[in-house]
Image 1: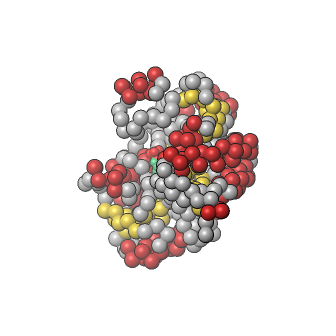
Image 2 (image 1 turned 30 degrees about the vertical axis):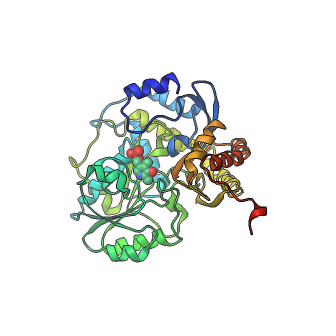
Image 3 (image 1 turned 60 degrees about the horizontal axis):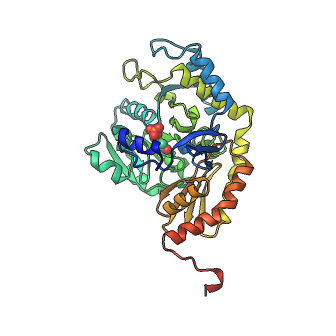
Amino acid sequence: MSKLQERYTGSVMNTFGPPALALARGAGARVWDTDGKEYVDLLGGIAVNALGHAHPALVEAVTTQLSTLGHVSNFFATEAQVSLAETLLDLLGWTDARVFLSNSGAEANEAALKLTRRTGRTRLVAAEGSFHGRTMGALSLTSKAAYREPFEPLPGDVTFVPYDDVAALEAAVDDTVAAVVLEPIQGEAGVVVPSAGYLAAAQQVAHDHGALFWLDEVQTGIGRTGAWFAHQLLDGVEPDVVTLAKGLGGGIPIGATVARGAAATLLQPGNHGTTFGGNPVASAAALAVLRTIGSDDLLAATRARGDQLAALLAAQSGVVEVTGAGLMRGAELDGPYAAHAVAAGRDAGLILNATGPSRLRFVPPLVITSDDLDVLAAALPAVLDTARTVAGLHQETQETRP
Ligand SMILES: *Cc1c(COP(=O)(O)O)cnc(C)c1O
């Protein structure tokens, strides 16, 4: 353990467990630890560092804004805040719509949750395997028992249905439901992609009962899947509410709740607020991210690098399934050695991430290069092999199989 990791343990509340590494700096999709060791970053700060580390456009935007006007409160308007709201509406293609800016994914979802209460209904329908954040409201929509149970009773009246099951939604949704909330691709569950047609059908079920259709694009949004928003890859899917965060600020904390049509005016003056939300520095950061994704054609790059990543993962012995879209990929291993793969990856200079015993998730910066992925391709076979051995699992070779 490095000195910094020791100081961490002595001063930072132990909610995350001990930190795996002490990191000192980054550039593009590479980071360096405090000993100077280099890593290819396949986690991207959990799908956050869309432009990678230390991107000049982000540095410039934040520096310029901070040296001009850093924070003013929501008593006042700023150019950065309004431009960001306008840009998000443009990218969504929504005219009759409004944006509420906050500081995180959980907060974006809290605002959306409060918005649904203004329909006069209180029931919500969410999916098993969902993750919507750790604050009490967002947690009430998050299915994982280990996250929920220590904090019950949670607010809300939430029914969980199996993901990717239209019949279960039809059975659960009635005219008392305020909203159906889903991730277009479940991220924390390990990059779980629903069947074609599921989200359109879910939207139809919600609308048949006068409920809002709310997509949590906190992880899938902002280019992650190769489209600005994952739902734009699907025919006929146009949610009433979209929540965003993670990649939006490229590492500067920001969240956004976007609502259209009747949903756009459900929150009225006095109904919700935030001190920091929409502050000019965070807004300028988000604008720099959105502009750079556009000007550098990072949506096309995300699709190309995403295909390269998916192909190299599928080629690994031990990987039995590759899921996802763009640069949001899941890899199912042939045994419960994902945590060992993360550890072996660190030794080999890779920042990997496990979402389950046999599941790896890859959500690297959208600026990751072909060379970065070649480093991954070269290192991964030995990493998986070591992980299997450490886990005490010995893969049968092709020859010994019957
Ligand atoms: C990460 C995540 C959240 C929570 O975001 P925070 O910024 O950690 O509060 C909510 N929804 C989804 C889909 C996420 O992936």
